[in-house]
View 1 (cartoon, rainbow, N blue to C red):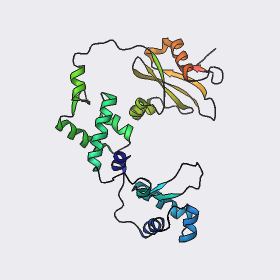
View 2 (tube, rainbow, N blue to C red):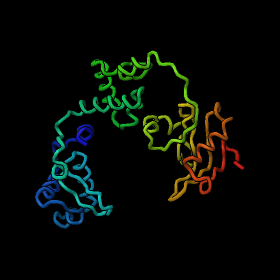
View 3 (cartoon, helix red, strand yellow):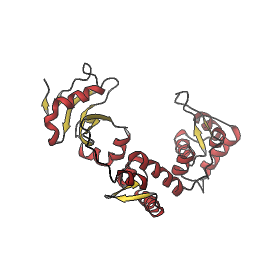
View 4 (tube, rainbow, N blue to C red):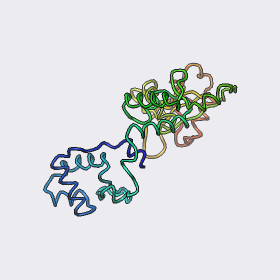
Length: 258
């Protein structure tokens, strides 16, 4: 938490009068919900809500979401997490640590992948990558970056690309790092993209349909032309993560599945 707090925190150096008023109220009176804040300050809920969100972005307050109720209490962040030192890292330092970890898990990546995964400004990521490369932590390889030790390890590595089809959840680690182009290439005007297809180690298709409470409605499966002949293998892979009974595949490459 400390690392990512230092990375994502948006300091509030010059709070507005209402921001200062709400923060002082929570600090003075202790945990309270929005209804009580409204009663004690006279501010409207629509005025208080954005203030709470801004104070939350600064890691000054914390919303307790444990009980699942909609009207939850807000606490001072330092009261709930006294061990977290928000000054332990600068934002740039935290970003360099995070990118080294990303490199360890992703092996090879480029700036757009890191930007897609972390949802941070590209200029900040670019600067951090340049610093890590200068420090010798990362090595520029084929338009992207790798840990130097991984580049050495893989220099003499020679193995066949594994064959197979995997149906990837939209929140999968690899999906999130490639989301910037996946959501464009496999966007459908009418259907939702339910899952993505990883074929022989590369993204090459998607499962289209509709989300619902319960089994998904699978309208169509699309894949790159090079894999269109692997229909049976792809269909079986889709059924490993979707119910054959409750989510029958209606079409494959636009043609009805019988």
